[in-house]
Length: 219
Image (cartoon, rainbow, N blue to C red; front, top):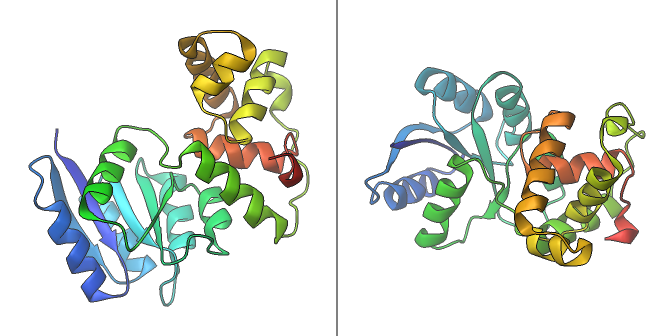
């Protein structure tokens, strides 16, 4: 199937550059370009893309608010684009529903791979990036009020797996620590997402921090 993509960035050169990279692939179609968050929402609801490449910082409605609105009502996955590897708004972007983030200076192969990964339903953040990103950003932000609404739905083992995911451990690392198979870990993660009504692994990490199952100092 062809992966439909909308690119939102307030710099025309960036939009054109990403579009050129993606259009070299037979399985990817760029169906919309937007310069603001509002345009990104309009284009996405018109074209129904699988993935939106969304700049965090745009005039008017920024990428975070646009992401929040899109992920609340549409079946679309958002990759946030930022110039800095520790953008102060990255945590907000992930909490708003983004499936990951990329730096704008990436090479074509990495951009193409990212679109395919997110379109397939996977989160884009590697465990090491998850650990550093969430921990570092959380240290500089007011802690949200504890959320305990759905944690009781998890079994003790699922809570343990969620804690390890939030600490940045891969399925293989979790399997080794718990002496179970990686496939069993994958099953636990899938059940956690279903029970907590979360989109992907990135959102599970954010949820773990917001419920204080894990705190920045632990990661």
